[in-house]
Length: 336
Image (spheres, rainbow, N blue to C red):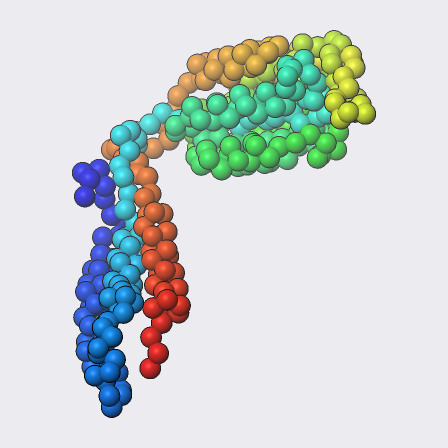
């Protein structure tokens, strides 16, 4: 066994004793069964043994091998990752509020629109996290929690991948987005709690004013880092498709409010960043992390991470069992 391989359920390996037991039972059953009931067996003896006769012992071997593979799978073999996770870690609780209004379809980041670029950059941002708990709030005319705070980055990236515009009522409810994000962080016990607001427009919807929401964040000591996406002014915007299915772009005025973004950041102790291209958005998120004070979420020791390796053994077990059943019912079928 490789030195980095271990079993999560080693006690299950005792079931390996079933394999030789199956072979013994198969041998005993074959011995006690009459090979041929016929008064003139010497006539058949002259013809010799057929090819299938030599393959019959293969059936119990296949069954025993399937049992061995299944038992190893149940024991859950795991390989140890070379990286060791420190449990005395510094982590941050971060809620990202992402704008899903139709203006995020603008093509000033072509060949992709603003939303696709934001999703790609956020996916990279999530991949780079180790001990930070992340949550996701989406908004347009209203705000909704898409994912609560979690350390399961794989699930979070799958959720991010599914995000689309034109699913929620249109508009840009920045105040509601901030309030929903604060609600996710209100009961957090982390020392560092922040909201990252990513939007490309001005507030024009919602029930809560952005500045009232910012004051709420300030009272909770939660800084808001605002990132304004897009160039502003007239930008290419999709207006449907032509006869050949190609997207038709038209210059459209999309209002922005950098002063509001700056005011929100100033009131809460955060920072304001402007992203006019994918690299600018990536740098903005990195600057957010660089500006944060780290807090400890867990204490003591170190923990290794493991990768599950039971899947191949499970496939082998099913494959061998299926092959044994197929041969027993067809080519190696025994008639009484």
